[in-house]
Amino acid sequence: MLTIFAIYLSFATNLWCAEKQIVIDVATMVCGPDPHNIKNTLAALTGVSDVKISLVNKTATVKFDDQKSTVDEMLSAMAGAGYASMAKP
Image (cartoon, rainbow, N blue to C red; front, side):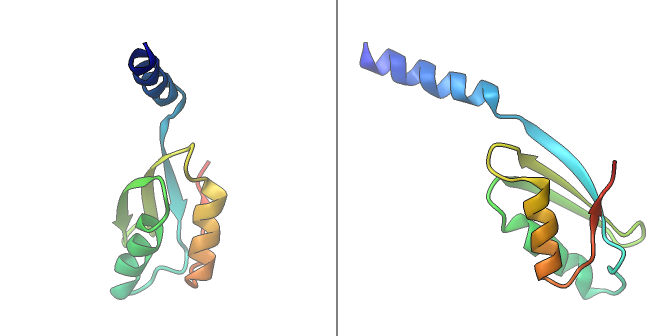
């Protein structure tokens, strides 16, 4: 009985978690090493599952679990790495 409850609880918890996607403008991304640095900065955050960088558009598209990471944490990490950024609406 306890095993069944544990399986149910594990499944139910996953229902509340939602993978989200956000696009972040990175105005200060200007040269070759920047995309690599930005990707590593964002990928290091708990809950981030994928990061796609566009140097041409100066954006980072991030997939993340909103139960483990927030947009504010991402923007703070970017600022800490020296990149001015903001979430696109």
